[in-house]
View: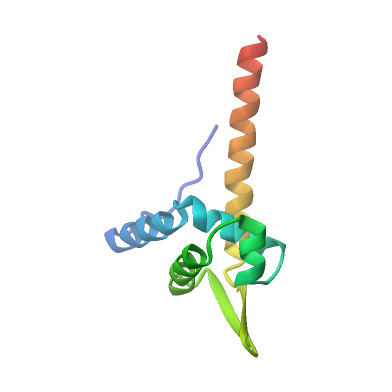
Length: 112
């Protein structure tokens, strides 16, 4: 398979990519993003969707907000969170397709 040539990343870009991947490496944050991919959610709805504790959700939402992966809109006493970085959908599709492909290869090797 031939690889596409891309311009080399600068050291600063490598550091920023590592920071963003670090944010996405936490399974709790991925569970929150998965829930938000369905649509905007309040913390109460995220508790129901993820079975996580409110304090844990708030902590991880803060990290996702700071990274500008999600946004927050106030609705009276509530805040509704949603994905604002549309690239997350493409990234998830890329990673999920890789996982599915790897699973097919493993299954094929087991079956023979």
